[in-house]
Image 1 (cartoon, chains in turn red, orange):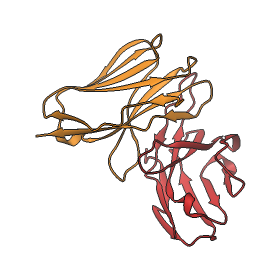
Image 2 (tube, each protein chain N blue to C red):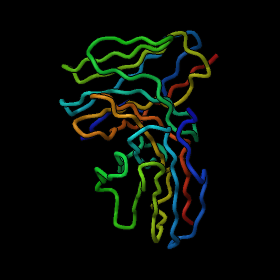
Image 3 (cartoon, rainbow over the protein chains, first blue to last red):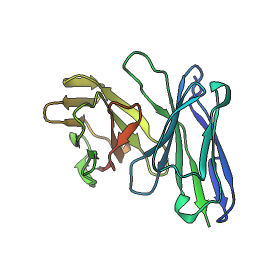
Length: 115
Length: 110
């Protein structure tokens, strides 16, 4: 069990640029979640997948954000035309849905700074 | 109204004492409750999960759940300076996403 991994760990970009983050879940976990966390706040849900299907998207997720999980393995989160307000830590979590329990384990996060 | 509320702290306790962290939630259909620890600049790390009313113990940690009062707490016994971190309460309601509180910052001083 190698844990959830995310790449890159840090990203600095200029306003208006596109960025893409990758998340590799714990192997055999069928669910993958994306959250965003800003300073002093708890993580906020963005979207999640069960296998390759995207089951829910937050109202926070504007049309500049898109996420994919092809083949139900790794996932990517793309932000187009970045804005300074997008600066945050982007967290990925994975879980193995078993009955009514769904314990999520987080990756190290990708810290995005938009200049 | 926030869905999950925590006192932001800081909560300061001396080494060896019991730290008590509290959380209330608004959605009565909430089924699963989690405590995560987050060190500064790091990602959340799962400490405890609890699903049924009562206490659940794991080492120095005890989670307590009272669904009638919509209250969940975390007790840390024999607190150590290495326990100094932000503790996030998270609730899973009828959807599968986690709703987090803003976290309580714990400081354990020698």
